[in-house]
Image 1 (cartoon, rainbow, N blue to C red):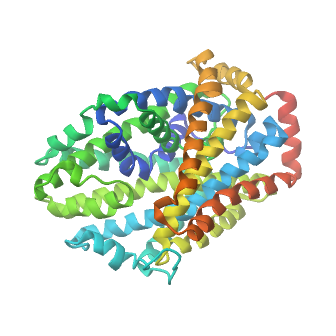
Image 2 (image 1 turned 90 degrees about the vertical axis):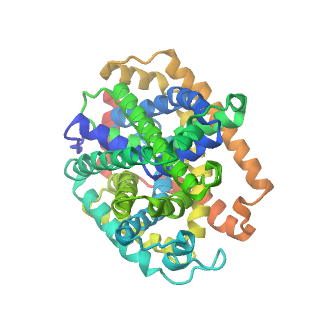
Length: 504
């Protein structure tokens, strides 16, 4: 068996896995998805999706990484040589995401500094798009690099690659032991303050009030599965890679439950904080809560600065806390996203970790400059939509179908997980992965394709959607297949055969 890096403690692994799952989407995506899909009633399909797809998939990916001791491409090639390309596909999805996710973290870092004197002023929308991003007039115009974004972007990459250079135990584990508890404490302070604001109760009422009529809608159930799927870092190659650094005796199933519920707990906390703050803003502006609800970039960088402006006291303090929380949530996820391709490059080409970090991280950092340009926001919007819907979701569907039905690996993974875990996996686990998850993801995929063929995403021109949407989504598949044809570095090939023969 190869001399593989390992986590120092079980808590270190759980914090890293939870840190990967807890990202920007928990804060700015989940509250909006829950509100749009039945409020309090959404929690029932959400919990069902967590138990029938989220945690089963986490257990599967933990078991793959732990049993086959490699990055996603190496682990999948050890299951079957023809499955390696799926691992590379997922690694390349993570690579693409890292190029623009880093830019959004850079925005959050900038806004942390802006919070000290509320630099965004009264017109927060104009400040973001004109003063800060210098947004181009139309999609496709790159313009120059925005210096406002470039400086914090360089800082983000220095921190991320510095952590990764230090390795698993002294880098990733240590960073998550600092970043994640800090994030939770900062966000708890924000939530406690938010729920004590005037109008907070009205915001929470809108968030939690159940619309039971919607629970019968298929759209709501699909939204629940989509939220669980995208927020748990499944099919990014992350959880396979992280689990490969676990010691031989590790409670995989228990770890999956802890990671899944920690992520959902933070999402619920984010929903409470966001909607309390939205209720406050609505009361200040004399409008109903539905008039101020937003999600994504708009919620974080337009609506939240407005809310902070309205705070009766300590505006700057709470502004710093909020945007520092976004920065930390982003960094814990970015570190995990980059680790997938750094581990993949290191094992495939037999290079040192230092060279892998410099090459993989360096190329990603250079490509991120496209998203730091004046037209970067349009690029980010399209690439993010397509790499999520036709990258992660499709890769997840292919992965689970191949594991369950093509190479029929579920029994082996079940035996392996049960041999090291306190909670035993039964028939429910295999039914979830072989039937429920493929059906739900398959429906999501068909529906997405039908929608995007009928009309261009967000009304963008066809050439723009094709060039930066469809082409990027297809390119990661093509490059993944090409990489799978290259032979593994000599020692890795020998280790692969040894592992297979030992049944490790």
